[in-house]
Image (cartoon, rainbow, N blue to C red; front, side, top):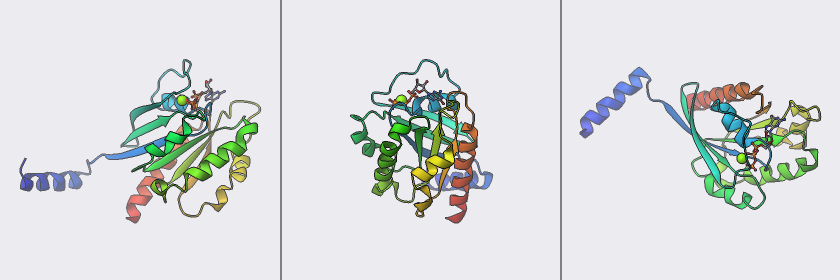
Length: 189
Ligand SMILES: Nc1nc2c(ncn2[C@@H]2O[C@H](COP(=O)(O)OP(=O)(O)OP(=O)(O)O)[C@@H](O)[C@H]2O)c(=O)[nH]1
Ligand SMILES: [Mg+2]
């Protein structure tokens, strides 16, 4: 296609509103938080046969007319130093917490606070899933939010969403927030 045709084509696409928005999402959190389970839930795959992620998984999903390229990176301590390598050009961070793992709330909070100061995540919206709410020992999302000092995050849009990646409960609410946030961001541009 020549330049003129390309230009014409892109104008047509804009008029028709058919240009699909493509987002790069990174999915992070401690090992055992439920990141891979969440990713499988989002793509309607079996959530019963999941093993710890040694490197990363990537999946492309369609949600709310957006194409989401989701990078699910292993959370084991030995893998965490590599998280930084995946942050470039990130449109959104999803951070997953095991709400029943009280012993590691401090650890997960520290990892999150180190992450969000990364230059590549400057101003990037963050959705925190307070996962495993199906467990009786799970802390409520509001308590986790307090522990993480989320109210001090003033440089970006953030949301905490209670969910069970296992049953799927609450997962779509989180995805709705992503869609609303990205649409509002676009309007503000
Ligand atoms: N009860 C319950 N268990 C869950 C839930 N989500 C994940 N799990 C379980 O938690 C364990 C870890 O889940 P994964 O999805 O592998 O966790 P991960 O965050 O990907 O872990 P890494 O790959 O090691 O970083 C598995 O046994 C899951 O079945 C949930 O919502 N409720
Ligand atoms: Mg995993």
